Length: 437
Ligand code: HEC
Ligand code: HEC
Ligand code: HEC
Ligand code: HEC
Ligand code: HEC
Image (cartoon, rainbow, N blue to C red):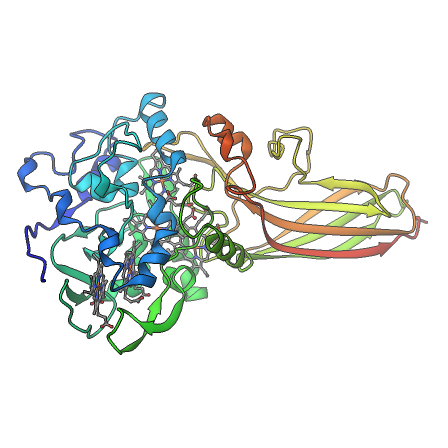
């Protein structure tokens, strides 16, 4: 039952990316000028479910991933709409090009789209074909440039001598084992400079860490690449664990994905209490902490504007809290770092952007860089405490805040099911106060 080759157009997102780089001038279709007949058709892209019988584990893992959710996520659809309607984004396929590569290369989705009415074949988002029809990952120049997709009967991958099968041909491409496979979707440089540049950040870490994206995000295991081949190989997990859970309740593997994010987060950084000093007069304590980033890119990375990554510290005298920072308010939000007054000491790692459209510009960035060690100090009054003071510190991660979701009209997602707080690391100590002098 060999699938017949309908079309073998080498197709590129490069033209879309060129529009991004050129501030949205020109048409809004990736092949402006070519005419629609030369576009690949939706039918040229198999559903991920067609791979399930022979690759059940790959299918199952991918099904619970953010790649599988990229074009069913209500948060995405909301911001695609507002960026066009409210923020004046000119390029109608700007957001869609990475979140629905198949929709864009076929010319089937553009502009403001509704999750209920997008073509069925685009709902796989970053499906198997967005990666395994890739014949060239594009240029190595730290910008957002196109990759080449070749819809056809050949699946490209990392296996050297694949066993033949009746569904597709197979061909080896070395870049599947390298970060360059991920590069052009995970590196967005706007005309105003680096914007969401996980790959560029990773380049800086590689000489010291020597770890490809796949080593952390597609861990290796042993098994059959397809059922019944009888060949044991080194395979790679397709859960693509990162920071976000799916933002729909019925999404597959929610519990498994949550546990996997929890484990990944525990590898992201360390936090330790370096010293606790009492002031000479015994009136205040100075606590010094050290954070070390062990992530292969900045922490947070990508959409670092939306993330809550922060330190929670509490000093207790018996059961009385004499000092705390990094606590939520009654709505579950942190104070505004820098500008807030409720929690002036709040230590949060984040970036700010002037504009979240294709012309975006980072205006502030204190995210942790790979292998960076940062000393962080707190000084607070003892508030009459005596005896022993217990100190607890935590480095925490939350994908989105209730305030962010409220702003998007998606407050119903502001629950532990969708935006749990993950502990990256924690430390504690006790100090016996001398009372000064
Ligand atoms: C065709 C484009 C594309 C390619 C290629 C691609 N990604 Fe992604 N990736 C995306 C998009 C878009 C998202 C965001 C989906 C969402 O959250 O809605 C994403 C999300 C992720 C996430 C989850 C982030 C989170 O917030 O939880 C991880 C981890 C990830 N990708 C890793 C990789 C790795 C590793 C590779 C290379 C092996 C890769 N990606 C290749 C487009 C791509
Ligand atoms: C009829 C069974 C069957 C179906 C259906 C099937 N595959 Fe495969 N696939 C195989 C076999 C067999 C191999 C080779 C495994 C090996 O050598 O260990 C393979 C290998 C691969 C490889 C590795 C290619 C390489 O050279 O590195 C990729 C990627 C792949 N398949 C993707 C897919 C995708 C995507 C789909 C769905 C569109 C799919 N397959 C559907 C049987 C199948
Ligand atoms: C040394 C391990 C390591 C390597 C290498 C690595 N990552 Fe990550 N990645 C992590 C950890 C840990 C997290 C969770 C902490 C965070 O969000 O930064 C993460 C988070 C992410 C996220 C979600 C980021 C966020 O904060 O929203 C994306 C997307 C991602 N990685 C993609 C990539 C890509 C693409 C590459 C290669 C260019 C890569 N990663 C290389 C460990 C790694
Ligand atoms: C975001 C990109 C991406 C997506 C989406 C994706 N893959 Fe892969 N896949 C890869 C990469 C990269 C490798 C090789 C990893 C390595 O060698 O480090 C791979 C390897 C494979 C292999 C070879 C065996 C192995 O585990 O190494 C098979 C089979 C496969 N993928 C099938 C699928 C199927 C089926 C789907 C959809 C259900 C899918 N992939 C979705 C990137 C992707
Ligand atoms: C260059 C490719 C690219 C473009 C263009 C792009 N995205 Fe993404 N998007 C990604 C990747 C990769 C991630 C995962 C990064 C991460 O999790 O930090 C992501 C993550 C997201 C998420 C999920 C993370 C979250 O906030 O919880 C949303 C929502 C999103 N993008 C919306 C948009 C919107 C709206 C636009 C257009 C204004 C857009 N994206 C343009 C690649 C892209």
